[in-house]
Length: 239
Ligand SMILES: [Fe+2]
Image (cartoon, rainbow, N blue to C red; front, side, top):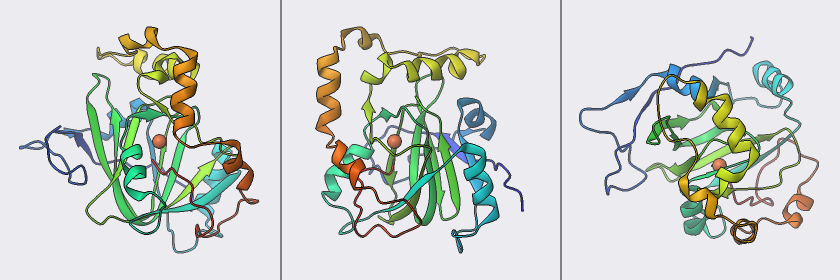
């Protein structure tokens, strides 16, 4: 069966003091139309994850988007080294110079993405959701109350593990490309680049990137990627 894009149920994020793992909806809820997420560049498919080894829809998406590498990562207490620190890192606003493509195999969680007015938009993901966030989109991820997610991470190239935090990401071409491709073409006003970006130096950017613990060794440790379990591959990213 051909892979078909699916709509997403999303809502405006209420920045209350509640646990980040709750839904953070306003009362009453403020839904965000799926169309708006599509305009921001978010893609979603629903995949039968009973058999990811030979799944026609998944194969079609891999072919279409050029995914040549993948790995499985579990985020849960006891399943990920430095779990608490990693969870805090996932929930820190950041972007990547590549798209973030995740197929949820088990468990669930929340992604927050920046809307055109700079406010957070939240959506929930669960088993079978294949989500793609475009390069240059600011976002963050958190587990929900299940405290468990297992995801297949898909890449077009051998991952370089680059998380660029806000507002450092504003200076990257990939961010400018995202703004031009998606945000500036929308009819709604809103901040695009952070005013703080002009104060960022190459030195501070390099420092923050290396603080995240990503280095060439991690990339070198990647096996000839296949659909294998994550027991020997504690990659410090999911969101
Ligand atoms: Fe991310």
